[in-house]
Amino acid sequence: MPQDYPEALKWYRLSAAQGLADSPYNLGVMYATGQGVPQDFVEAYAWFSVAVVGGDAMAVGNRDLAASKLTPEQLSQGRKKATEVFKKIGSGK
Image 1: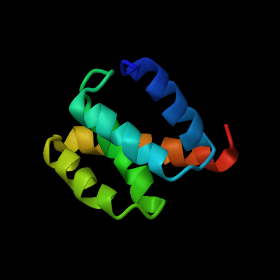
Image 2 (image 1 turned 90 degrees about the vertical axis):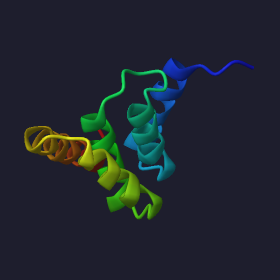
Image 3 (image 1 turned 45 degrees about the horizontal axis):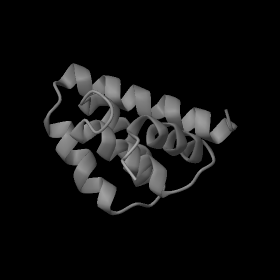
């Protein structure tokens, strides 16, 4: 069966909203590598940050790698985006 990145993105986002631990990490990988989405290290940083807070030890190195590719302004954007995601997941939206 061929990979369906848009479908994977949809389901990872839905499962991340439900608090499933692997989903934020997988979203970070998709954005970091550009699998099915435009490569975006700000998004990758945000999703890896969510995974780190969820206890995913592997996400720490990936978050730091994504951060190393960002300007200070982009890093600030990534942190803000991560905070927004935390709020949405925490509120169940």
